[in-house]
Amino acid sequence: MRVRVLFFGMLKDIAGRGEDQAEFAAGSQLATVFDHYARQFPRLREMAGSIVLARNQEFSPPATPLSDGDEVAFLPPVSGGSGRYTHQVADPEGHFFALTRLPVDTRQIVAHLLRGEDGAVVTFEGVVRNNTKGRATRYLDYEGYEEMAIKTLARIGRDIAAATPSISRIGMVHRLGRMEIGETSVAVIVTAPHRKPAFDAALEGIDRLKRLAPIWKKEHFADGEVWVEGEWDRNAPVAADR
Image 1: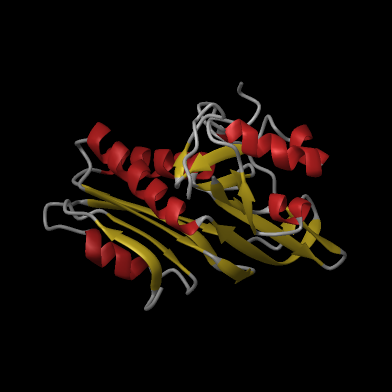
Image 2: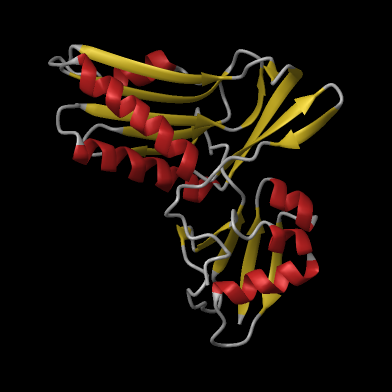
């Protein structure tokens, strides 16, 4: 059976490609695919405890069986179309989730989320800083597994809203591509009748996004560049789980 394999972030550099096609025997599992590429690129084996696997845009454990035509993605630790948003989900409950390659317009998102009964709006914006541990940063590049990332943002937001009925709506937008110093890379916006639930939900939103959304950051310095290593959520099915 034939499988499409995708590599993201630093794993794309290790494999020397962003995409590959490979043939596997019937009955193969995700672990079979991982082992196939780990033999070619030993660094993948070394990183097995932090690489998460996905099958058809869903996190999946290594023992997951494969079918012909499946899409398999190798996802390194997270840092974290047309029109303004390349992907977006306008939820029936009024929540909003999107990816964009343009500047994030938080005022426009607030206007979409806010209702008459709301007395609080909490906006968190992650912005590009000019250094990392004293090393001067020139700019950042963000890339993501976009089809999976937008589903993940929507799932995170809906889970938080369901668990926190005291908020009204939640919005989560992540920017991709090149970002200059001072630009917003991610925004989490929560509206609510009262401030405390809005603050709590916004904090929970960005914390989960950083651990679960398949989006990666590369920092560019005057003397080099590096993919920023983060950490997956402890429940994410890493390649080392057998």
